[in-house]
Structures are given as C-alpha cells and as structure tokens.
Image 1 (cartoon, helix red, strand yellow):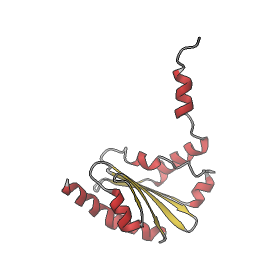
Image 2 (cartoon, one colour):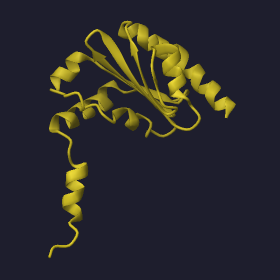
Image 3 (cartoon, helix red, strand yellow):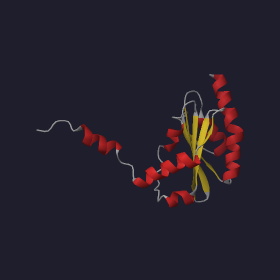
Image 4 (cartoon, helix red, strand yellow):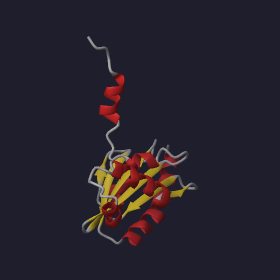
Length: 146
C-alpha cells in the first residue's frame, strides 16, 4: 500500500506550464512591463507577432495579469493582448478598486469587481492613451471613496 504521493500530485496540478509559456512570460515581464508606481498600476501589451514568436497558445497568457498585481504597491494590473481586429484587455485589482466599472465605462467590458475584461477596436497607442489618462484618476477616486 502506497502512502500519499505529494510530489506527484504537486507536479500534476502545478508543474503544467510549457517551455514556450515560460519564455514568453520572461520576455513580457523583462521587456514589456510598464509600471506607474505613483498611481499604483502596471500593464503589459502583447502583440500578435510576440505570441507567434513564442508559439504561444491561447492559454499561455492565462494568469499573467494577476502577477502584475503581485508587485509591491501595485493595485491594478492590465494585460492587453492583440487578437485579430481588436485588443483584448484583462483587468485585475486589489481592494476597493472596481475594475469592472472601469472596463464597462471605457472598454465595453464587464466581469467582477476585482476581475474584468474589455475590448478596444482602437489602435494600441490610442488604447494606451485612454489607460494613461483615465486609469490613474479612477484609481485615486476609488481609493478616496473607501
């Protein structure tokens, strides 16, 4: 009779990332991460070419937006991924910042209070400008209300 094989179970549950995912993640966090420490948010924009370069599948970016909010003092993380004719935005937040409201207001999105998504049919520079103009004010107003 065998006992509990915790190492095997751990591997089956957690050690499931592909090498391509690890290389993509390293590249994105080293080369592409933008952080606004003063306003408490960070974001990563991923192009179709970068996804192709790393042979990334649709699930290879899963969870990366959560990692942005694990940076000290960062309250909101945004992952922007190019998909065909649109940009897909994934938002995560901590505490009293309702990213669902932000996504609905600016990116025709929805979801939950601390986890939401949206879509932009604007160019990346135009989409980035909305984030840079609107998100800091939204974060500060959310924190001042709590």
